[in-house]
Image: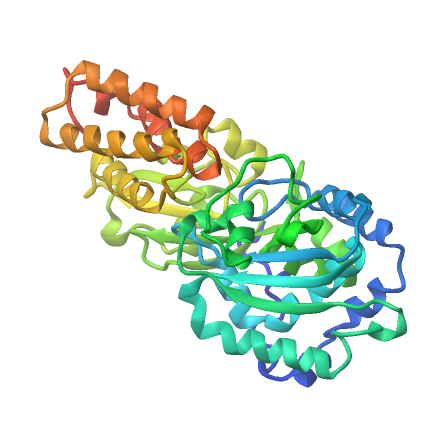
Length: 416
């Protein structure tokens, strides 16, 4: 099996990203022309058959989400593209925006048609400000060519796209916090229900998708067979992954599901710097779980990774070599969550603070058995009672490390 493919990335380097004409010369907007002549439910069925799970980390089936969004009654529906990409070690969506902006615009228009929406919003992280002109230009040219605005392609379909930039808050990757940010409010999550598919942006029915999830759709409409022939089992197709850390060639790669972790790290990412040993690998960004080198021969699929104790998540893979101890890695991760917690709910606000204190004590050799028990309890309470996904998953790395590296937390044994 090839360790790298070009399905989602096949347009990279093939056209002038500042020119809609150049994009159309390679087949751009043909998927949209095809979509508006189809029954929207047939498009949802196609996505379901392709078994596409949300590429932002939640893994919610894309076909089901669009079908549900379409079924919601209400006027002036909205589709949102979550281009916040605040998860550490994750930079795949940046590459899609930079190398294929018109495909993303086309995908949003198709999403609007299927869901019955009148407006689309791209919420892009503040750190990607250098790519704003690229997307604004793509939106402007799509409007000039009649792909945005009123009566698109003569089908009585009206749709417009708006671009918003966040202020760099990690928590705004969460749907309701992102929506509040667009509304001009503090980017803090809210309680659900109501779910955003019923009452989202400005209380309008809203369908929110990740950049990669959306970007797949035009390619699938044009060539479903190639996608379906990739992957294995329940994990059909390809996946964009970001590999970073102590590897020789960090970067973004498109792989067929089923590629082993070893092939990803040693073939695509060039192996470990100076041939050092692997200390740990974290999957799915800061909120992902960690494991050791025993996972190397595990196929990269949803089910295989889950069985190995980790998850696909955002598609990020962070490789840490033997120079960094498990505790120091966890302290670094905890500093991130302590900084990025919005502070709204008690479990997350207080839990992150106290776990940081205990990890610092561990690093200094000052922790005792009660500290370990307290830290474990706090982590479990956070995962069960926090308001949003940040607090629920902030201690994934800690809890998984306690299972995979028990000797580190055995105060009578050796530290790693």
